[in-house]
Image (cartoon, rainbow, N blue to C red; front, side, top):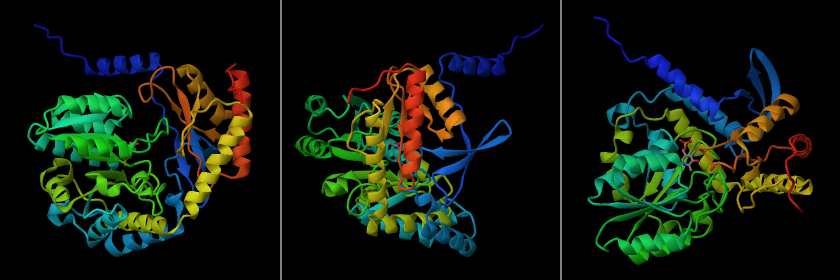
Length: 409
Ligand SMILES: *Cc1c(COP(=O)(O)O)cnc(C)c1O
C-alpha cells in the first residue's frame, strides 16, 4: 500500500512564495564594511562588487571602527584566545566578563549587571524568567515593544496586558483593574527604533510607584547616545534609580555584540540562577567583553561622537526638509522618511543602491504597520556633507520619479 507523506519541501516553498507575493520576503544586502572608512562599504551583488554608503546602520557612533576598540579586541584575542570555552557556569566566566558587568552596573547606577549573548537574548531570558518565575505576575507591555520583549513575555506564560503605545491613561486603566497585592511588571522602551519617539519614563515610573509595579526599560537604542555618560534616556532625565531593570545591547552604539540587564544585586542573581537563556549557552568571547568595556568606558568620558552624530542628524533633517521629503518628526537620532507603500518603498531602496550607491534597507510590514512603510535613516558622525548632499539629491530624483507627494515646508 502506498503512503502519502507530508511534503515538507513543498510546504517551505509555498510559505516563501506567499511572503514574496505579499512583498514581505527579505533580501539581505551582502556588505563588506571597511574599518576606517565607515559609513562606506562594498556590496556584493550577483558576483559583482560596488561601492556603497550605508545610511541604515545601528552602529550609530561608528564605535565598530574605533581604533581603541579594535586594538583592545585584537590584543585581547592574542592574550585570551578566541572563545570563552564554556558556559558561564562551566569554565566560561572570564575576569573580563566580570569587569564588563561592573562597568555596566556603574553606567546605569545599579548594584549589578548581567551579560547575555545579545540584546534579544537578554530581553527574552530576563522577561521570561521574571514574569514566569514570580507567582501570578501580570505584565503590562507597551504596544510598540520590540519582538524580543514580546517573545520573552509570551514565553513566561504570564498574563499579559498590552497598553496603547506610550499612553499613560491606558496604562493606568489596566493597573487599576489589577488587585494591589498581585505582582506587576511594566515593560517598555526609551527610544522606539522605528518611529524614533521616546517613552515617558517619568510618567510610567510614577504610575509604577502608585500601583506597586516593577519597571523594565529597554534602552537598546539609547545607550551610548544619551545622557552625560551615555547611560541612555533614563540617565539624561535623572531617572535610572527609579527603574527596576534597565536592559540594553552592546551591539548598536557600542559597536560590538552582546546584551545585558542592570538591576539590584538580588534581581541579577535571580536571573543568573534561573534563566535558561543565560545558563545554557557559551559565554561571549573574553576579547568581545574587552572591546565592549573599552567602548562603554570611552563613551562615558567622550561626548565628541554624540555631538558629531547629532550635528549629522540636524544636517540630514535640514537637507530633506528643504526639498520636502516627508519625515516623521521626533526628538531622537532616527530619521524615518515616510513612503507609505510597500512596493514603492522597496523600489526606492533598490534604485537608491543600484543607481546612487546609497544603501537604505526598506522597512515594511510587519516591522511597521501597513501604510507606514519607510526608509529608516541613521546618520553617523562619519557621514560627510557630501554624503548628505548626495542623499538629498537621490531622494529628490526618486520622489519625482515615483510621483510621491512632498511635505509642505
Ligand atoms: C535590536 C533590538 C534588540 C536586540 O538587541 P540585539 O543586541 O541586536 O540582539 C532589543 N530591543 C530593541 C528595541 C532592539 O531594537
